[in-house]
Image (tube, rainbow, N blue to C red; front, side, top):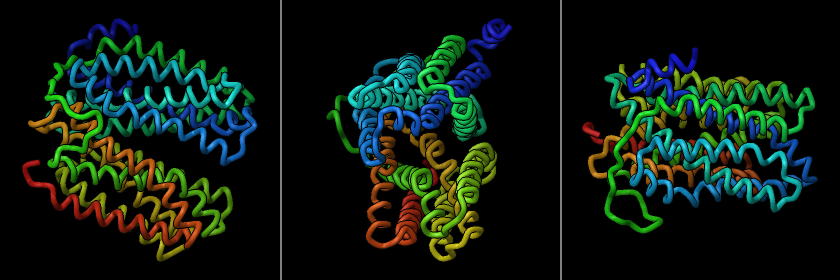
Amino acid sequence: MILSYIKKIQHSPKGYRIANTVFFFISGFGYSSWASRIPDIKTQLHLSEAQFGAVLFAFPIGLMFTMPFTGKLLNKYSSRYIMLLGAVMFNIMLAFPGFSSYVWQLIIILLMFGASRNIFNLSINAQALEVQKLYPKSIMTRFHAVWSLAGFAGAGLGYVMVTQHIAPSYHLLGISMAMLAVTACFYPLSIHTEPLPEEKKKFFSLPDKNLIKFALICFVSMACENTMYDWSGIYFQNILHASPKLTTAAFVFFMTAVTLGRFLGDYAVMKFGIKNILFYSALLITFGFLICFLFPFVYPTIFGYVLIGVGVSCVVPLVFSIAGRSSKLSSGSALTSISTIGYLGFLLVPPMVGFISEYLSMKWAFLVMAFLGGLMILMVNKIGENE
């Protein structure tokens, strides 16, 4: 029945949109499934927090190292082929962390896992840009909303697996096989794109000058979002001395705000325009962190978290959408250039928060994040009306 429906909507805008939605779901579900078993894998290898933190750094190294390589692939081949490659690699690598018996094995697995996630995520965003061209209204943020929903679903299933004492190896292997089957079913619906080869550049190069402001906007948004993932709970514990239940509830409020923001983002774009939404997003991020700094109490901080969640929710998909219109660069090159700088924010700023917290206080670290939000406001104001 499913296969007959897939065949019916093949080579149609609806089919392309469904396929891209499914692949965003695969990405979010797979990643959150892995994240839900991180504590068990740490225990399995008998590692301390510091040791395991060093091991986990292999994931972003694999991701960053393959960024320019992915851009070259997207310039040479249709993004649907790169998406298939990324999906297969991503789901195969997802099966292995639970089987690692030695630290060196997990490091190699995470290097490959990070590389595959980069290939997969850039290619599904390139596909999303092509599907967007078929629709008069904005649909970009809903793809990312599905990623967030998939993250909730993967984390929920992970919780069930942990409470039922299912080993990470069997859990992740099962998810891997299921997602590979879904990939095989929905890949035929994906849209074919003609690559736009460009002149040769250095393996690592800065973004085109017209994209610098967009790269910096992504840098701030990704830095703020990952800071919330890494430090929002610790802020509640160390600064507010809140209970574990309130700490968990605060993060749920943040994630819910992110997800709802992404579902409502396309409607907001149609009503107010991309530039205005980016400006309001920057304001929300700035005021959210300022509230956390100025009013270090449970309920004002939760309100600040909600503002930050809504603020970061739509920035990356909307910036990708603008960059995808570039007449000077292919979608692959534009996404790669912006993502390279953006992921630096994702990787470098959260550790900076830790250093500031160590020597001053996490309150002051959150004030620095508010200043980053101010930088984003400046960059948004540099966007021209025709961009």
